[in-house]
Image (cartoon, rainbow, N blue to C red; front, side, top):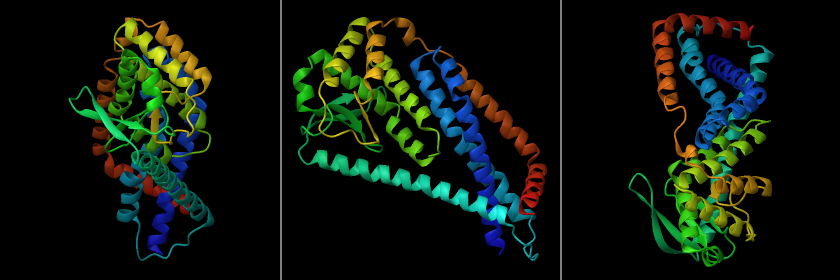
Length: 321
């Protein structure tokens, strides 16, 4: 009974926090997006991804750091306390929410693995593309069914290029397009997509769609360093958008052209109007501020941890009753 009560209480806390924070994100993300658009596309994409992932991170952290220890340390094991319907229902919802995310992530991984395995049967390595870290990403020529140009893989990412894309692109356009896909690899965008599958929550699809568009624009900006390269990448986007693939990209891949026509047009317009201001970092100290805020929060929690456990246990007692 003690284990059942603890499981119900902890998952109830997780479900309440996760649902409340996710609802707040659903209501506020457009304002954050408008603010982020004032800076670089990279900053906007990072801001949207952080906003999307923060409900799960906070709910999990509070559950593991506060709810679980407070129950284990302060809840008497010998007392047969009746368990109400509310914590049972909330706990069940929390378990379902967690299992749904795990199922979505596992299903997306399986689909991506099967798709890449199917491409690999007739693929051959045609070269390597360097990253900023000094590593190289393999470039493979794929059969006609695959998308024209896409990056796939999480632990060992690769760039897949179709024969049709290789035929229609000039050498400079191909190099710009490959740099775009390498940026996705460097920023681990496929891993981020997997995390979004794990933290699935109703009503977040539009936020995730806007984040994907921002990642494409961020990769565009990082792939070019002058107006000539921007025009080459714009030409590559236009040409590959006309190559309709026979098979749609897998969920955990980043194709150069896979979004709606309106988004593709916006990317092309940004590339044609390229300027060096986009390459300058914005809010350079934002990461430092975030780390300082986290350090202050951890220090405050360390000082008042015992009192926090008592208060959290009192809240769980109220929830049980």
